[in-house]
Image (cartoon, rainbow, N blue to C red; front, side):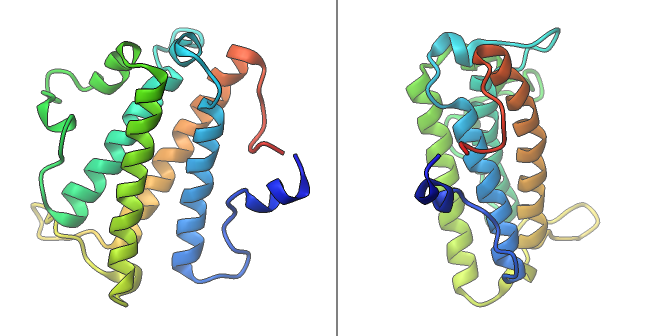
Length: 183
């Protein structure tokens, strides 16, 4: 990797604000997932490791759903949109993983990129009000609590980190690609 490419890899700031650090960590996880799923054809995105049925394509589709549902449901308090709103999640909780094999690589990458872009726009709008990470989302628990933006973003970082670990193993099994970034 060239020095200029290394400078483009998203890294959280070493001494930035809390919001910059959390968003930087999330962007690094998103970039790692994008890299781990890049350049693969349908067979590569359908590959599994061991007894697991998790695929790279399934991870893209699952994380697209997570992006959309976290911000729609928890932050905005609105129903999640298509295609997620047509799924019977109670009877088919693995729908995103199961159906990813039916989707083209371009479609899987597009729905994930578009979901992440929608999330970025929601966060940018929220932070533009000056309320920071302490702002409360619209979702209310049975106990009357509401998640703040910090919690929603940290949950996304955690979700990505777990699944980027899966992506590491799957991608290595496909073509030997290892590491945390293109460097």
